[in-house]
Image (cartoon, rainbow, N blue to C red):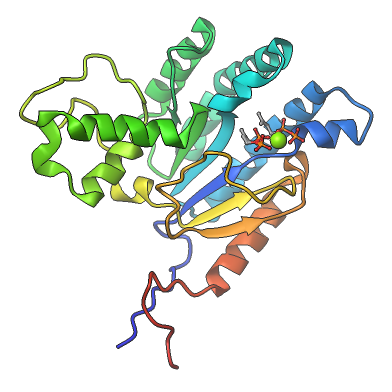
Length: 261
Ligand code: IPE
Ligand code: IPE
Ligand code: MG
């Protein structure tokens, strides 16, 4: 018996994107890397709008990895500043477009004004339901898995340590939620992500590299992977549309057998 899952049009789809290539895009034009990041923000806006049109359910964008702290402080600073500006400016547009925004990753190392902007954007968009937009900031997938394993090891979660619950802990929005009960008799007092947030359907990386760079490792166990040489500032609705068409042509078997027609 073969059982093949064909993805319906857009519905319930979780797309994740490693937005890579800003620096090279700028350097190819003789511009400072920061210009690439600035232009990259415009690409984010276009792609979020296209994601709503395409009826994508969840869009997770890699904005800053925990390893990006290795970059010069001036570049790190300008990235955070751009992110803060983006959040401040986009909230209204998110509400109009039905976009619920949240941030996954560590927050304790971020500049205070950025933390404030994140909290404000999450609050302002909390009731929106057309698209779940998750920005990964100071995010490391291995750290997320480690944190889930620590929770799992605490007595509190022994009874519920199924693969599904563990996956949802891995996908939890904050890596270090304050006030987490160490040994309570129930799940931690953080909203558990939905199963859909814990499963990536389509993972796209722009910028030509063929690697995951510590992004959504658990969640991408059966994700369809797509790598494009397009630099992130040049990525837009047509490229997203092409990726979705390619995704729909692929056959996801999840270890089963191909359809025999
Ligand atoms: C992606 O572009 C943005 C971040 C990692 C923050 P890069 O800055 O990595 O651009 P390249 O890879 O150097 O071209
Ligand atoms: C991955 O890109 C992180 C983001 C896009 C935010 P990097 O440019 O940091 O990845 P590596 O260093 O090429 O693996
Ligand atoms: Mg890069």
